[in-house]
Image 1 (cartoon, rainbow, N blue to C red):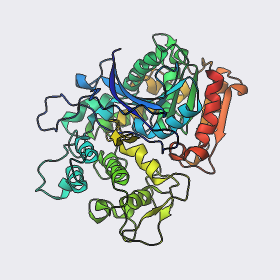
Image 2 (image 1 turned 90 degrees about the horizontal axis):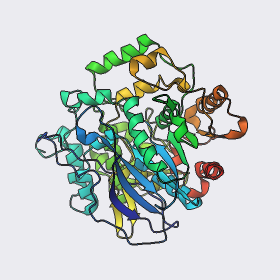
Image 3 (image 1 turned 30 degrees about the vertical axis):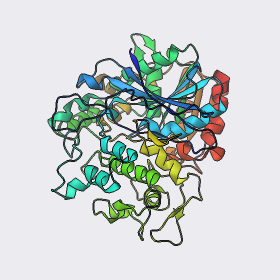
Image 4 (image 1 turned 120 degrees about the horizontal axis):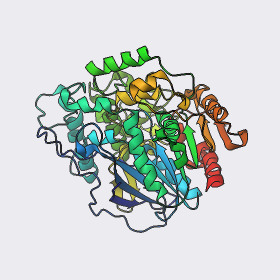
Length: 496
């Protein structure tokens, strides 16, 4: 597989807030109606000055041909830590998530580990995004209002003629998105295999981990049949962060067929906010997070817009930081956003516009940098070209994940083309962390995975945070209090 070098950026040391990056990929599909995208893997020469901080790199890995245009046969990887380190923890994001939301915690890990890198994988669907005007905003070439209008304002204002053109139309169900209906588990696993091969070439140990759906993909990879060989043979361990897959949960053939039939006529993408705009959740998050980093104390434009759902808005005019914190904090975020809620703080007691107070586990700036696509460099905020969301999450990937079934063969797998069949043959240590969202499933699933392969208890690291953390908190909790770092670092040390 061909690996090309993207941008190289440096943080300025452990004393700084550790941050994430964001962007979309290129589009050479020949559709002249879509805006030009920055080339995937393009090295624009933006290199931060050498500092004592950990290095962050964006690399592009060419992968096997999949459904759709050839320009999507690649994935991008955010690499954290010294390039000469031989051991690699490869992390896979969850549903509607992008690689950059791992960056803060990844930098925490490599700061605490010698000889390790942490790679976060941005799946091919993230190449469908258009970050052109977001990048202009960061560079100072577009105002906050222009950025809002480009991505959302046009929906309610016909006079805005230059704007974001969603793949597959607003609902994601037009013919231009048909190829994404086949972006299921087999495509994701083959793409991930190319990344694992790159990591193995460094000569050290490779551990595969994932958050949420990324945990299911991790189990799928470890138990996948690669021409008679289990994917686990490529790995020295697996890590399940509030995700995974256990036996006995596979759908019936009829249930799986019903999902496929619905997929044929509906949108190719998940619509997690239920607005009929499957890309909206990613756009909302990217806009709010970017505004929070770039202009935290400015009045929120989104607050005044009827396009932002009322249940996301505080009762008083907020700053950008307060609007973002209010929308995602566990105490004020509406039902339905559990996948991204965090313990972030509260509205200030006074002020016009009203600000935000960080008095819980996740500082609002760290949360915003996880999802915005900005990393703090020597010349100010810079973009890695990858954000913390997936604007277009393929429904087929979620459908297929249900059939992984802890790597135990079942009839739905044959229908869906899922080859996770080596679930009784694993011989590697397992790490698992569960939050309130896991509801007992994550740690029980990890135990079952070990039991069916005869992995002894001493090879299990099980961390129960179900009484304290939300689903996304493990990536957002500031360094000194982060139990994911506290427990995964020793697990990795036993391996490499």
